[in-house]
Length: 363
Image 1 (cartoon, rainbow, N blue to C red):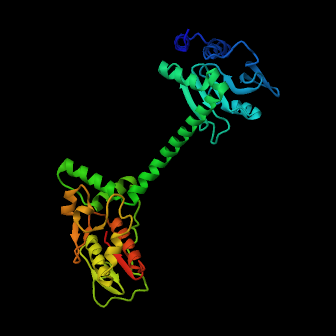
Image 2: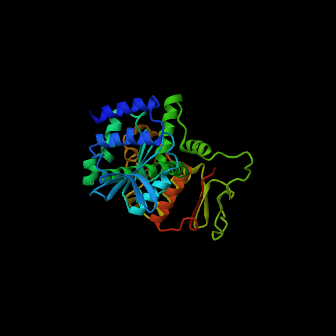
Image 3: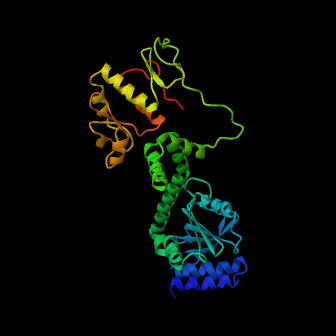
């Protein structure tokens, strides 16, 4: 009889309620499956029942060589295995067994006691032989519990490989919310563009990056009704003297070397700052363009609008501005991105952002 046929009959027995206690599970399911997995189930030096550990007993010690445990199997009555991991782990740690199996006949839990994490995190796999497909049951039982795989060490290595994969998946799932929050907080250009493009495809109108950024932040970080405090407005550093010409301190614009320059909006500030820095230093634009990385997917400054937005002629037409020098500057960016670009520009121009040059990009 094949392993698949054994599992089919055991499933039918579980559904019919034939395994009423731990002993019936042990003899009618566990020993039967071990035999089907090529274990010499009646050699008590290899499949050792009631293995003694300083006054305690584990239901089965699977041994190789004979008498030396390589895996423990703890058996419980169907539906009664919850919370039994602690006892099993104590057994495994005491002897240094690399593989521990907890089963109630229907659910099979495979653990690597020596790995990191709590009991659940050290579980490599949980198999329900009633709910899972027969092919999956055959595959997993053979992978972790087949006699020759245990003896050769292949089963332990397979379990460790699967544990590493599970651990990676767990870390990735735990990090996904953090990555999403970071993308929203940093107003990632590609994210804003993807959302704006989808809005345009649905209604025919395309929101600007700041509108998209505000929408995402309001949904990720909803404001509570009781919140009355407002974020502080950008202030002029005290080291910069009051400008003799310009606009009120709260107006959109920038200050460089104490001189205030007004602007209509944040994008005008970006363009004006690049014009001012290029007039101070004729090599500024070349050096900025030579930076190895601008945005995540595109460049901020280029010789042509097509270079700013590869493969996006619509953005090239609508969101690029030509500087007086002939260079082109991309303007499909949010306020947060504009501030990052200006900070990059200050580093290239070797001036101190916030002291020698400060900006107010509005709200």
